[in-house]
Amino acid sequence: MKNILVDTSFWLAASNHKDEYHNLTIKWLEKNINTNYRFVTTWIVLYESFFLIKHKVGFDAAINLMQSYQRLEFDVCNLEHESSNRVIELLYKYQDLDIDLAEISLVIAAEYYNTGQILTVDNSDFKILRWNKTKRFELVLQQ
Image (cartoon, rainbow, N blue to C red; front, side, top):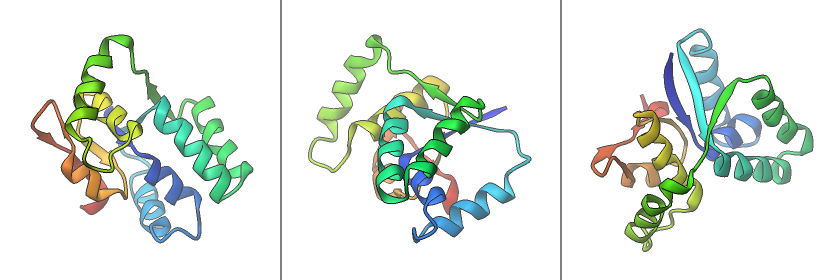
């Protein structure tokens, strides 16, 4: 099984029929339904996704995301206390940019799972962010 990271922007676009990236995310999901991908996100991303989906799409769509987790359709990476130094280092490194804790948490997940493949429509941030200090994220939806 190959791990692939999932960002809030992907969950939101997939949940929201009005989102400009909705069709792109749904087509990718349909095309890759039988592949060996295992989705991985973080608790911070999951919280952010639930909040945004609930307020932009509706409660039922947000609950669908949690039910997907309940069915073990994706893994959630915890940020352990041991990673706090790295989180703070990254927050300082990117402080002049509009990078938030959810995105930083995905850098930590990339380092933990040793993968830079990510499902996101937030291409600008993930073109800048680096995991393991120098590795670029692979923006899967752009392929």
